[in-house]
Image 1 (spheres, one colour):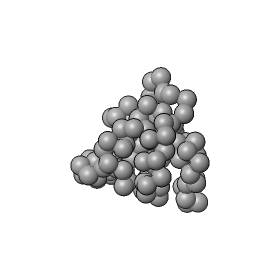
Image 2: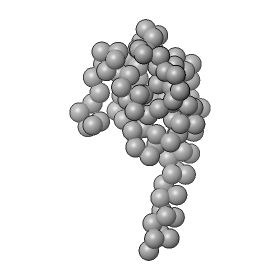
Image 3: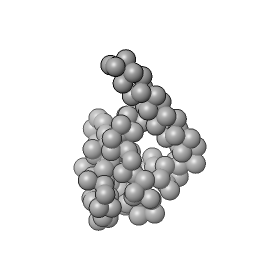
Image 4: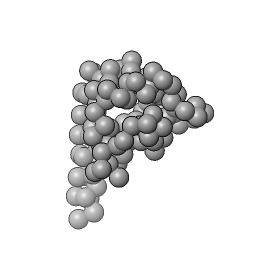
Length: 105
């Protein structure tokens, strides 16, 4: 039983990372790769800036915030590959004066 659960978890992780990688070809949640990178300093794993830049907030304002919610859980592993802390990333919309969807708690 434990082996099948481990295999299922591994397959789920592979699927999530694959989907995130495919999405990354065109951007992330409605943000281009360049716009996504504008927010990286404020959500960095190491030495993040205290607040997001105005350019980051403008990019987040155009983003699909419901899509961003998907990165809170296991998909947050994909963010770590880009040296982004998922918890800090989830705080960026609020710091930009944006409201996350209700189902994103």
